[in-house]
Image (cartoon, rainbow, N blue to C red; front, side, top):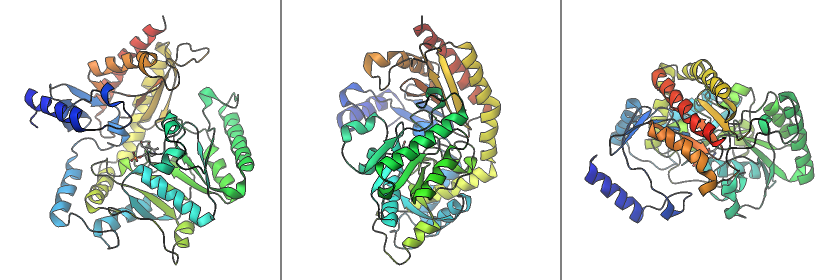
Length: 449
Ligand code: PLP
């Protein structure tokens, strides 16, 4: 389709007639036809440019049309477009080695999948096989993917109409200092009480039945919930105490989003398995995987692993993954993300929290932040109710519309707006985007009147 009015009409017509969209009532949506993208910006067919503050689905870490990633795919396509998984392949092996080099501890082997949900499916399968146990614990306020076990692990409303798909899952409450389930008055109390709660759930569910605990290292879509100091160490200790496999879901926060290759590196913990996807190649081709510790990998040295995918370690997906490592190192992106987060985004959001009565809390790390909007700062009543839809969600929709009107594509979930731009965004664009959000928050403030 050409980037003109006729082209746009055709894109819309084909989409509305034939494309069945994710997580949507098909007749109630109006997908934006996108004509092009470059860096942190994409354009519609009418020439409107949007700063992509949601990095698509928080996967576009290196931005649209990064020349190194595009060249890597083009060169790989010209050399060897595909090869099946049981053969050895240079880019697949190189990417696995590069991932093992930046993963903590003895996580040295990689099983490649097509995305994040299947990475979690396979991580759980490995944990079940190694422990001989079945049950998995995961958090309320989490998202782990749309497939059978991954949606069961998920602790948000997307699970509700998909139950039961994997009956061997139990949920627990994680730390969330701003809305503490444990009546905690400090981060230390939150850590201590959330760990006591987790241990109680382990005991009540039966430690000897639990194969794995899966946790998003920083909870993503459900709120950019940064664990308070000591929490993940405590999870590690409980997993060790009860012989449970600790799986870190880093599908959203891995590959630089918070300024580390893996977010667990920031917190100084070593899980048994790490799942990844998205940022590994900025979503230029479908790719995810499981990074596997020696203890778990060696279980399968002489026993076959019963799992696989035709496209495991697809060369057209791995080639931009290798290029991703080269770009991060050459452009010192991890340092850049930490700097922009602590010097630009954090202070500016803190300022918005001062000036806008609708802002209850801002929190985050690197280029991964949430602005939590409330009706009342004292009671912390959310600006829109949990799982709000339609008219109930209107106040947030108005804030999002104000952002789009001003040229920024926001990430909005329930009563939160997240700030998750591509890691390559220029500082000027980052500041411009924050200016747009600052102005749009006036719309939220007006809802309080
Ligand atoms: N885990 C987390 C933390 C995610 O954010 C997502 C997707 O947003 C997934 C898993 C699922 O990944 P995918 O959509 O690639 O299956």
